[in-house]
Image (tube, rainbow, N blue to C red; front, side):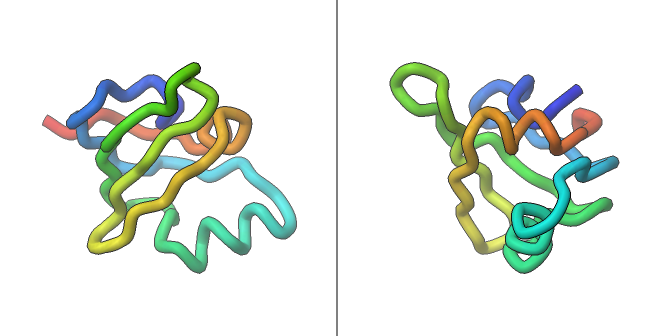
Length: 75
């Protein structure tokens, strides 16, 4: 499931990042890498983006980018 499929407050562990080029480099620099735990903090008004918590960092990503981040739900 992509990170966009998480509900607000739900946690997931990143299993794959399918982005390429500059987007992949930006995500990696912000801590969005395989094995990291992310939490869905909020969605934008029209569900066009999601706010993620990664460690002590908050990252807002567009829907297209969020769908490139695969997660498995933490239990």
